[in-house]
Image 1 (cartoon, rainbow, N blue to C red):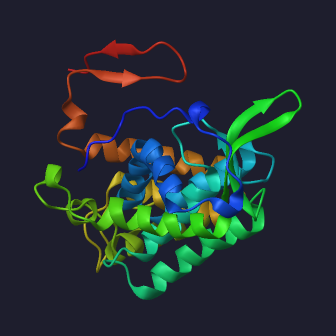
Image 2: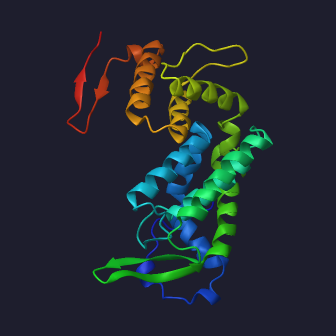
Image 3: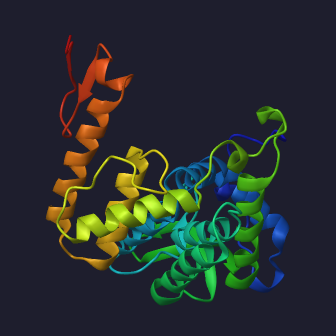
Length: 266
């Protein structure tokens, strides 16, 4: 990977008119966001499209049923709209998923952006003030949509020297088998049943990621948040106990937004 500066000072950048902005300046933004963007990519490769769906819903709720098209200049996270667009493009590029599955979830993410984006014309970086948001850099939306394709392809599917010339999706990725298991688990949640951790005919091994993704898929169709959450926590706990490594790990960590407690279960 090319070395890039660890910090980028947006305060030192002049304000540019949208009609003179081009990809080089957008590249500076993605370099600044790179670590958080990689985290998003890894989340989707490990948990599938459910990871992006969950983030999109959370981001919209936190912003009053809107997805932010603006962000703080010093925030290392990509703007909400761009994160979800990158996720949609990443999902479309996962070759281990069938075309129909890719299209379904990518289209769903695109529709979320079209419906909830706070500004459909431009992306703004700047600072909130008592008088409102003050942009220091503005990007027209269409070129920025193209950069999300580049970011998704580069981070997910291009080889890196630091990975011995492998790419992230080659090391670990979501596939049709994962979707089958997740769909079955989601159906069980919707029937108010604790999902089976045993592989069903045609399935590979069931992992905690399938339980989490299945709960998210179920919540897309149901408002029974408490019931589905309780069932998923119970299933995750049993999955933990079945794991030969973690079930006998000498130190466990428990937290409910409180001080960690340490104890030896042996």
